[in-house]
Amino acid sequence: MTDNSIYRLQQPLIPVNNLASNLSSNANGQIKNNATPFNQILTKEMAGVTFSQHALERLQSRNIKLGQAELGKLNDAVEKAAQKGAKESLVFMSNNNLALVVSVKNKTVITAMDGTNTRDNVFTNIDSAVIV
Image 1: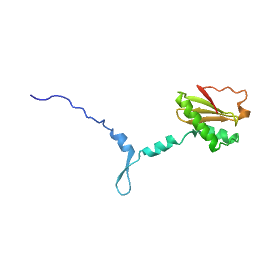
Image 2: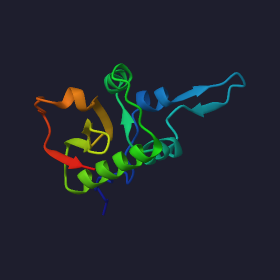
Image 3: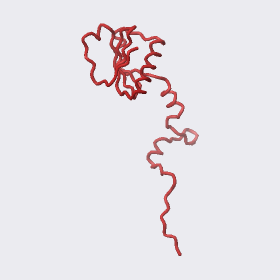
Image 4: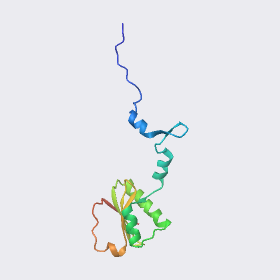
């Protein structure tokens, strides 16, 4: 009796166009992989909070300086917000009178305001606030 079953591959096939985009050959003809190495991705994820271009411009224009202690508090605040399921959070640093709107999912500061700019302001598109 003949077996007419269809056998499926255990591993998915990688489309040739995706594979070709991640591979290139060097001058010696050896093929090398251009995909981002796992350790670079891991290092970026472990680095902590990053700042958007807009936030960097706001920090510079408002002459706001953040030291290692403030960055540590900011990282802790973002981690706490992430544990509670926050997506967009206002981090208010009371000792510096500094307000930062942070994308918790991306660990990215979206904008920054000092004490003179936070008075009478309304913060929108946030779902949580962390006061440190």
